[in-house]
Structure formats: structure tokens, C-alpha cells
Amino acid sequence: MKPASLLQLITASVLSIGGLVLLFCGVYIAPQGEIHESLLVAFGEAATFAGALFGIDYTYKFRSLTNGKTNRQSGDNSQTQVGTRAENDE
Image (cartoon, rainbow, N blue to C red):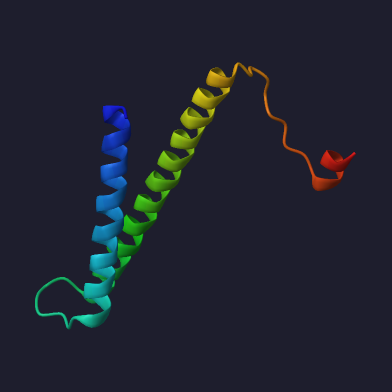
């Protein structure tokens, strides 16, 4: 695994978990200081969304690298075409 991919995976995990913690704090814990609960919820939603996007990007990069390795190992250099079910049945 490349260091950039590992960093992206760690960032996605931290953002998602941190966002969920802030969402929980904003909803279930009464505000005791200067930070308003709506600010915690808004930042928690943004962090969770950013973490999800990082995670989705990481997943597709990992799958494309994995598919490329299996195609090279089997000697198949052709591109896979995706069509509808009716097109594939013909």
C-alpha cells in the first residue's frame, strides 16, 4: 500500500469518526460553554461527508489497482465493457 493511500485511508477514518462524535455531542450533550450545539452538528455533518468522500475515492482507487493486477497476471489486456443485461444476453 502506498503511503499516500494509507494517509488517505487514515484521514477518511478520522474525519468520519470525528464527525460522528461531534454529531453525537451536538445532539445528546447539553451545551456548557461557548460552542453552540448547531455548530457542532454542522461541523460534524461536514466532517462525516468529507470522510465518506475520501473513503469512496480510496475504495475505487483500491479496486482499480486490484483489477489491474489481476488483468496483468492473467495476460488479459482487453478492456471490460459494461452493458445492459439485454445486450449481454445476445
